[in-house]
Structure formats: C-alpha cells, structure tokens
Image (cartoon, rainbow, N blue to C red; front, top):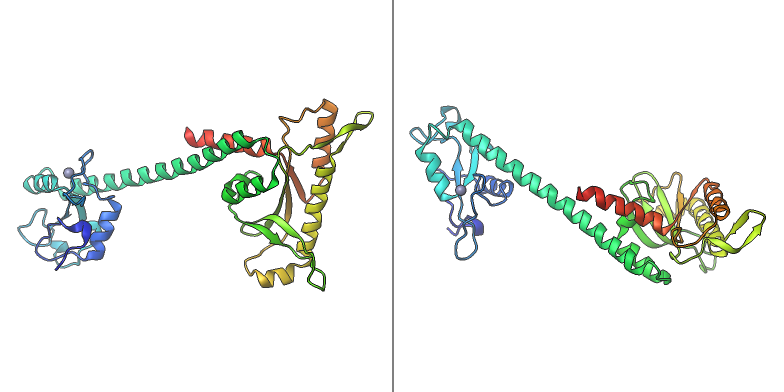
Amino acid sequence: MDNPNHLASVRLSRSSIPASVIKIAFGRSANRCAFPECPPVTLDNGVPLLEVARISSLSAGGPRYSPSLAAEEDAADNIIILCPTHHTLVDKNPEIFTTEKLTEIRDAHFERVQRALSTDQKRTTSNRLADLLELWNEKRTADDEEYWQQLFSDHPEAFSLALEGRAYTLSSKCYVGGKSVANAGGNVLDFLAQHSGNVALVEIKTPTTMLLAPQKYRGNVYAPSRELAGATVQALVYRHSLISNLPALAYESPGLRASQPMGVVVIGDLEKEEMSEDGRRSFELYRSSFRDLKIMTYDELFGGIQMLVNILRD
Ligand SMILES: [Zn+2]
C-alpha cells in the first residue's frame, strides 16, 4: 500500500496506528521532531524524515510497556513524533526516557508550536496595519474619494477604532432604502459595518476636505464647512432611511440587525488643517452635539492605528 505523502518514512510498530491519529500528531507537532532544537531532516523529495512512536508500547517487552494500555486503541495522547535518531535514542534508554519524560517532551513541543503560531498571527496583523499606515503616509493628501473608498474596502480593519474595537463585517455601497415607488433614486451608503447586535453607517469624505468654513461666522464662532455639514446631514438621512425601511431591508438581508444604528463620518485632517483655538472649539462643540453620529477625522483614525501597531510590535 502506498504511504501518504509526508509519512513516507514512518516506521510503524506491530499493529498500525490509525491514519487519523497520525495526522493529528503531525499537525500538532508542525512536522518536527519533539526534541528541542532538533534540526529538520528531509528526504530528497522534501518529505520530513520523521517517525511515529508510541509513548507507551502496547505489547509486552516493547519500550515503556503499559499493561493498562495494551487492550486499548491507539490514542493520539500516546503518540510522539520523533526523528529516527531520537527515536532510537529514547528506545535504547528507557530508564531516562520514561513515559512521563516523553509525555513532558511531547507537550513542551506542542506548546512551542502553539506559541510560534500565535506570534505569526500577531506579526501578520501588525504587518497589515503597517501597510495601511504606509498608504496613509503616502496618500494623506489624495483628494480623490474613490481612492479612500477603495482603501477602506481593501482594509476594513481601518475602521476598527471608529467602531470602538468591536468585531464587524463591512459591506460597501449599500442600499439603505429611499427608492421612490417608480424604483428611482435610493440612498447608497459608502459602508455598512455589521457587528453582533447593531450596524454602523459609515460615510467617508477625503482627508483634504476642510472641516470649517473659511471665514469666521461671527465673533469667536466658526461654522462647519459646507462639506462637513452636508456629510453629517447625509449620514443622518441614511440612518433615518435604514430605520424606516428596516423590515423590508431585513427581509432582503436576513443577517441585518440594527437596533440602534450609529452614523460615522470620516472626514478631514485636524493636524493639517490650521485652526485657531476658537475654530477648534467650534468644531469640537459641533461634533459632540450629535447623539447618533460620530465625526472622526482621518488623522485620528490613523493615529489610533499607529498606536495599535506599536502595541503589537512590543
Ligand atoms: Zn530529533
């Protein structure tokens, strides 16, 4: 019978171990010998040279024989993956490599594999976020809304701070109701972020969009720019449209849950826009006055991502 690929060199003892058990053992050991620092040895075809060994032999006279196991099926728990050298070493020195010792070696190996995997995942996340930051630094002054639409579509994690760190799925260009009876018009939102119990409606402008009107309104009062005022009203209209049409929309999209939808507008760049203290106060008062709407600037969004990257790198 042909051996499965990576088991080409497996040396099996008298009764064979079920393939499913072997597969699990190889997976958990990441195709490496359980001995710390044992360098991987592969055959010419790249197949790792490894052997499947029983920690306690099932047959009398075998290494580390355990009568209590003899009648039992081979369990994954009784399996250790070793290179031929270490397999021979442990079988020739049963007084050193007892059942307990081998179990300890095997479990420490599993732990090393797990740790390496989670470090890898951490690195991948921080790489993605670092790529995103690089794009931000390069394109900070891009005034093309399509560019930012695409960037957020490609990197939905960019909204993580605007959505308070909750897990979500992001859909772009979503219809949120508002078509006439003649099926004309309709409100198409930039992004809809669905988290477990609620949705956020996200409207984006560009980082170059001004936040305040160029001229002071009067005294020490500044008005929001036409674009900021427009974007906030637009987000509120979409929110209202979603709530009014929720039964119909939920019928079309059964996963939609929108108990208390929140609007989010991503716009402007506070660091780049030169504001007087009065201007800044007017802006902060304006944005904190909304109940169901959050206004976030691009530099705030990416500043938060920079912090995440720093944390993940530590
Ligand atoms: Zn080894």
